[in-house]
Length: 102
Image (cartoon, rainbow, N blue to C red; front, side):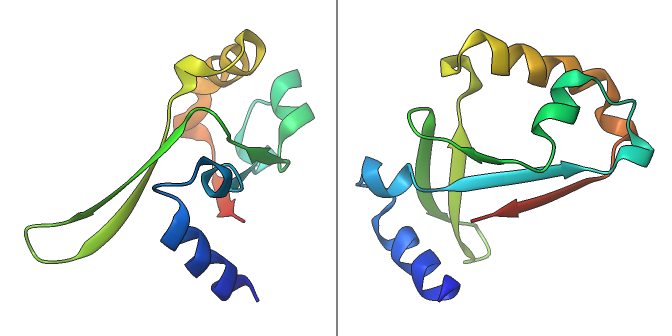
């Protein structure tokens, strides 16, 4: 199921752009905490597939904990999504955001 697929993704994501581009992020802002604009109403809770602007790096902390870091470079995004995200910045501290990955 899902755990097996995520394990496969973790095994292949560093070297394979095809695997890395399968990663979806879903952010759901709880409306009661946000002064929602049209961008938020339109895309709230919708999966976002990040293809060309992501990178993955493995590492180990000083304490010996292994990690997998997934980075998204928003500078590579088209103008409209960037503008939508930037419009939310002043409100982020007032928001409750549920975040999921598939």
